Image 1 (cartoon, rainbow, N blue to C red):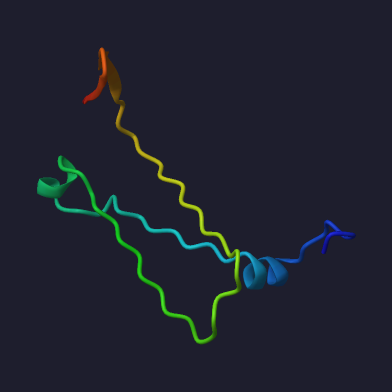
Image 2 (cartoon, rainbow, N blue to C red):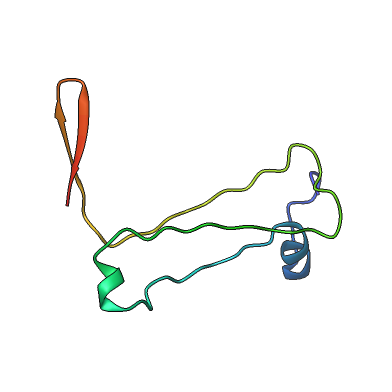
Length: 76
């Protein structure tokens, strides 16, 4: 793979799986509170050493960070 940057869709699916969780379809009561997401996975074989997982969280909320000396506060 290092010598050839071309990855087929099948290779991408096998080598770099991606999972998407859409949490926008919640009741209105839950939309105004933080959403806790916990992911648990079971594998049929041992996971290779140095395997990494990344998360990208996309939100439509605007946050303002306020600093008062030593503390950082988030204002919605």
